Length: 415
Image (cartoon, rainbow, N blue to C red; front, side, top):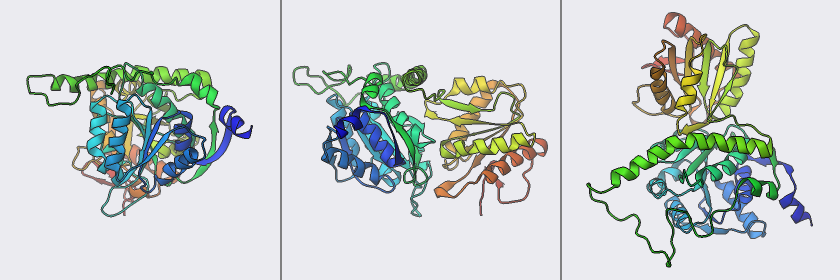
């Protein structure tokens, strides 16, 4: 009776971020989990192994010999029409890179959580989004979860998005290694019946475009000559990624209707309507930055924030609309990752700059990088960034201090 209540009753549990990811896979009723441990992701797989071993989760749990094999297993299982899940981080994601591209090329709705960490060398296992953003051009949807609750809800929503016949693309849900993966917070876990109402099972006879069925033989993945449709396959992935924005928004609305939690869309603005100085960033530091904005507002500074929830597809239309604000003077876009040699030093700030150019507006733009390798970024640091942004707008300079403007990018808290 207790186990039955655990499955069907709504619960609020104190869980680490990794345990939340495992609970989401459990509630999504995934058919196949492929597993290989890597810090700080390992406890996702430990939790799933316990669920399967105790009979609380009816899934095939397959231990693999490497991350490359983990994603190969995801591809093979998903080709049969199975709902699949795995998790990784850092070097493990890099090792599975070949098959990451394969999953997108096959248009398979695999969902994978990333407990993001710094890339070696030197070795680092703390939060840094350089790992997941190194896969930005692989054809996967990429979303950042800034709270423990958002980890759970995002995994559930991304299955519905990825398995939509109009999408059929894989999805990453990324969150901070150790800052989110190993800290514990209260999380609302809906009962299985409510999840089933929102997330229907996959079609019984496989995905509409690709299946492994001896009664319906097809050819897939063999070589294509230059005059054949290789280019068209790539075009269709890009076209679908752009079209997915409307399906993401529709899914978020459906989720709110059933569960009451509103994730707004691909972006979440905060006090931006009359903002003169705007900060754009991702993950848990975006959530923390609300405190910095509140602090500045109390001092009379018209500060605002945009939390970027999705990076792929990039929320171009939403950002162009937002940038029409008449009061807006200056914007800082902050990456917790590095894109070496790019015009702005970071992945998101480079893409954002192209959006800013589309508006035709003269707005002071300051790309920045912070918190690499898990380095702490305090609310005071975030307030200081707004002060730097205002000084940069007014005089083109940054005050002397621990933030350094180098080659057009502000490095926050650089030693």
